[in-house]
Length: 191
Image (cartoon, rainbow, N blue to C red; front, side, top):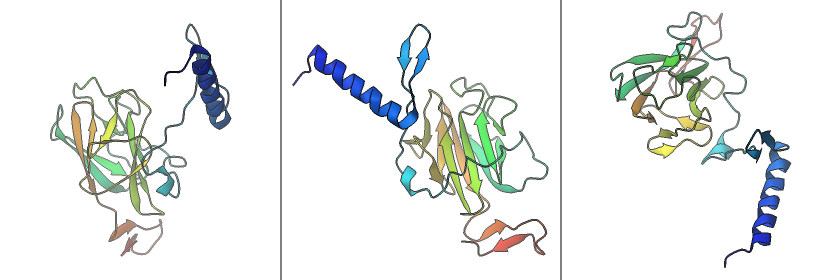
């Protein structure tokens, strides 16, 4: 059944109150009225024990001195096909800007300049994760939209705009970098 004007207004007010209860008051946008801040809930967001993006420092663009390689991203389709980038043991941001660790400035204008997406390696879990940067163009992991932080596995395909990337893990089930000062500098058989 269709809602009357008063019922629609009441439903909208209730929805806004629910959003404000979760995220605080809605922001005023000049000329646009009020805009509710929303939190996107993803497919597996409850399954991830800690947020790998929260505490990690972003990696520097290009080869990063002092950071260890944890994996690679290779452009397999679209502009820049064949280009490869090192994923560090921290957070590697993806965008077209020169300051991005994974700079995809090959002509795909549907990729944002700053932080369209990010890949993080969490050394405590010895796992990789991908997150979207909140941009308007969707980031897809193996064809599925990334709506929250998702676990990333070896061989996964990431699509941003017209560009498809393949993720290759170096760290994982059988290898992880150890703490600085370890005799071997690495851990074998990490879980």
